[in-house]
Length: 214
Image (cartoon, rainbow, N blue to C red; front, side, top):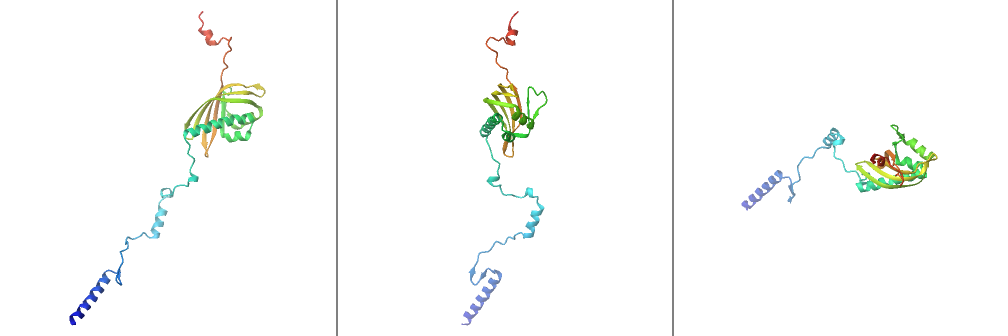
């Protein structure tokens, strides 16, 4: 009897000592250990955010609606040719509002009669509205070269019409410079030159005269 009582006392003492050394073993429950890694206090995180410049802090990607439209070269070429046609059509209709939309505020134009002086956007639009009478036009050939958010368009076109009562029909070559601003394309410069008319069937050209032998 004494031996049994002594054994029970020893068992209680051993269990008490085990509980004190491992507080997770309480009431016979074997609870897994929690992660004891210390977490940074809130004040430390706030101090880090203040110390690191905003530009270096991780940021979430912009929503799809805020992402700039990405265009491939084929789409850009088609859009610019459409704008070239719209430009000519606006001249034909003398549409000032549309011309102001297509041409950038710093647009300028120069031709063989301009010498070194170019014509500003406002002057070009005003003279187009007042003096141009374009009856028809046609883009014969086009060439588009895209350089990121700028492009150069070469067009060979024919037109029939008058400027201030003077005949202005013929074939022309134009070089237009386009720039993409605020997600839209606008023309910033144009150079035009009228092509010489082909000689008549019975007309002798200067080249033919020089090629004749004395």
